[in-house]
Image (cartoon, rainbow, N blue to C red; front, side, top):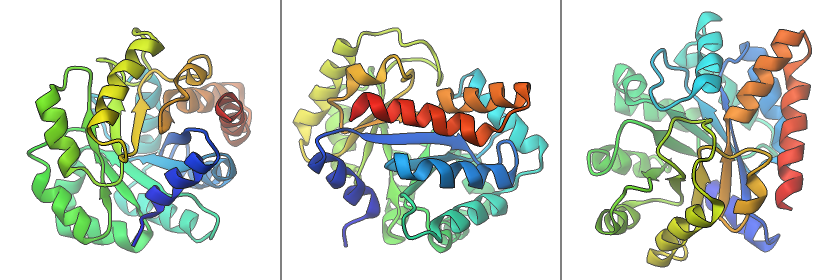
Length: 266
């Protein structure tokens, strides 16, 4: 059976554009608002990444950390995150959901229990930031048995030999980290260099869906539209932060950002 993630990329290829993947933190700034944001941006995006808030998010920059802290402060629990996803997926038009977080969240619940909850709530994929290949092989296989995509990560320092091995073990999508930085950092490398590295990955397996993330904003997204997919997170988290500071509705702010991003790649 073809996964919803694969179907999303196939639709984008047909429309001759990259997939737009958005990242928001579950529970920011409340559980209700978090769900509202997902429902409101769903018509404009292709895949929704939902972050599991962590109190020490080492891979994340300031904007996503602020989002995570707000969610934790408001009492978000793992069970609430699954409930948000389940509510979101009730809509037949909802987009695939990829949960993104750290292995500690999974370890605390137990791998099997966590995956069972993913399946029951409608999660389509998982990104575990601190569980690299080959240490993730056992868990990735468990994900596959539950029909959940485990998304492997590649970076500019990943060797060609290692890329080939990771690609061989990958599921329906691979995430290329554009630069050695935390999320939301200013893009320190040119679009030309990013696409050069991206094309090296694609040559290994042209059929694999490879997305680019880290440092992508409204200003930079257009120059990377040759990729299969582009991930934007910090810009959305920043929109929530600014909106809350101004006392305006964060849902409207995030939707406006997403619409502008979409306009740059169609």
